[in-house]
Image (cartoon, rainbow, N blue to C red):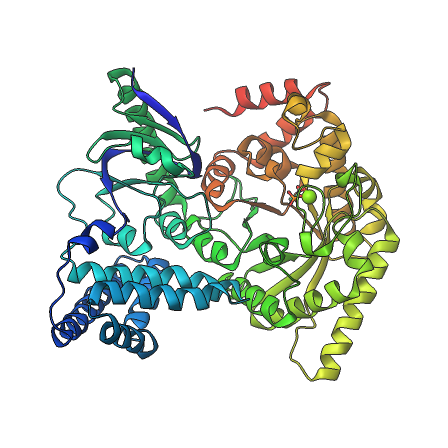
Length: 570
Ligand code: PEP
Ligand code: MG
């Protein structure tokens, strides 16, 4: 039996290759190192810095040449660090003090990293990892550690933390996957791997020791499965999956710049759901048209206090700019429910999904809401932005929201700050009350975006995070379909646009009937865009309307699902 291990899937896809241990500790090399005189050590430092800068410069050029811009940017940041006197002077001083170049480089880097780690700004905190990465590379040069040597075989990089520079140094046609011990899915290494769609499994912790150097391994970046030394049957199964994945990728790549349009010319805008401005940049390679949901609560999470207007502005501006003139819908903070925020000190609730959350907090906390609205309005100057409020249930909330926005504009006016007067104002339709009220709500907003994750939860009274009732959770339930249809119709009756940003939008079968209902936009995690586009391009509006008429007559969600899968699987 092959050994099967379970990690956390971070970047989906099948990877088959040979383990190359990477990002390992330098301790063993350091212990064996014999330093020379201080002058000699200083010379070694200078030439190692120059050598690393040279490698980085070449690597930036190569990355740019093949269009890996995000990776090139990170490598360029490493290059600047390697040339930054702040860092190198610190290293020189330490070499003079310690007389051992590699040990001094690492000690000096650890001190600089500590300073970055203590900073408030998340971006600057992340620089700590970059400082350590570059310094390790410089020290590694002196210790005689070779850059990863990739032979003819496909490799799977494996280490507790595989440094971004190591991932960047292995070319596309040689890297099959990444396995990491650490559990973060947002660190630079994962961002780099994601921008190159390298299947990645994280969170293996000490179990990494059971994966030997050179072992033949299969990873599934979706499920987090790792097979060490797989048997013939498993190899066959995963080779077939890999072949399908490659064929899908080729078809999807060809679709990237084509519109999501039916055979008879009905177009739906396919936008991306994002949690950070970087996601917006990554989404471009899937051919997204704008952002339909920026979950801004992620800007508020992982910190110790409320992010300032300025910090939020930088974040939203970057996302708006990454949309290249398409709309960027920024949802106001949706805290509460399954997303707690410790520094708001919200007392324990028995029913957090029905409690003090989302717009209910925002309307009650001027100190929180005003900076956010002002930051979005200011970001609107750099492209097209929209404000979207979550969890709306009443007209009163919309009117209060509008009055907050007016006040935010007035404050910006008084402060002489530039802002956009054309930022759209919309709401999420994610409660049954909102869906029922859409004919009225449509008078007060510029658009609706249907949040099926919550709409299904509230309509069917099924906790979205409780696996024991997961079998009841079905976006094709007739009650849900009727609320969705009502929402889309209310929007078109009033001449405003409607979209969807819940998970249902990424279901290609659902996309067909939503298009037939008249939805204008579907927003989803970017990698789902090609599948939905392929489906929409394979049908006509007329056919879709026939399917819609049939499913709206059905009595259960299971019938709808079965019918659509049979009718639309070509
Ligand atoms: C939704 O409820 O469908 C939605 C998109 O919002 P979230 O998943 O963030 O609650
Ligand atoms: Mg929601």
